Amino acid sequence: MQEQKRGRFIVFEGIDGAGKTTQIELLTSRLTKDGRRVHRTAEPTESVSGGLLRDALSGVSRRSPCEMAALFVLDRIFHNTNPVNGIEKMLADGIDVICDRYYYSSLAYQGSETDAKWVQEMNLSCPEIRRPDLCIFLDLTPEQSMERIASGRVTVEIYENLDRLTRVRDRFYSVFETLADTDRICVVNAARPIDEIHADIVNLVRDILK
Ligand code: TYD
Image (tube, rainbow, N blue to C red; front, side, top):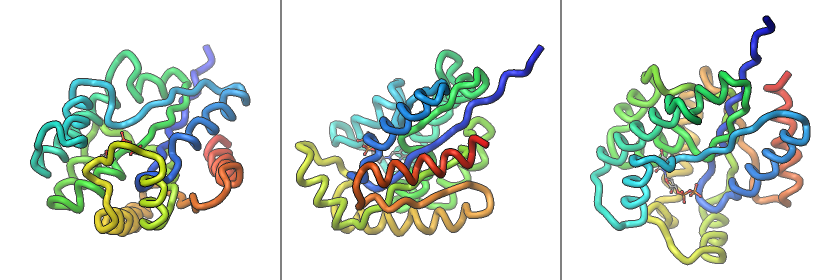
């Protein structure tokens, strides 16, 4: 019997307003047109832990920085192992997984709010949190990010202000340095026309499909 080829696991990251949703949609339809099966997903997930996280992010409930970091880990473990449509199950079935945010966000956001080593250890040493095949970081300056947020959204989440965006972006960069030997991370300039960004992303993804 021919062995099923595993799907590829692609993560999109970026500071708020970088256009992840648009680029994920474009990549999903490109890969689908190429005959691949694709599962789109995101963190926080739609599970109970994801709901707790969304309440805290929007300010409906209050959580300490350590609670947030631990909840994101819990949510991510569920995301990986859920037997119905979890990341592991999808990849094993030969389906590509495109995920909007993953542990890089925890290392950058929660890592700047509490002990960064602890956050890193929880995420990277966990046997039930898989490493992606590719992480695409859509990059904007914090000023460009604020402009986009201001023009497009009614609700402003707790992680969105200029100082914080600056710190988070700096942290993303230092996280990427730390992970340079273990993770395939590509930084893409997101302050360009949508189709140019998409073309760059398609080239990056082609490299991991070979
Ligand atoms: P959401 O509005 O759902 O998505 P996005 O901003 O990507 O369009 O917000 C998710 C928020 O959760 C975002 O502000 C970053 C934050 N976050 C963390 O702080 N840590 C994490 O591990 C993840 C996955 C997200």
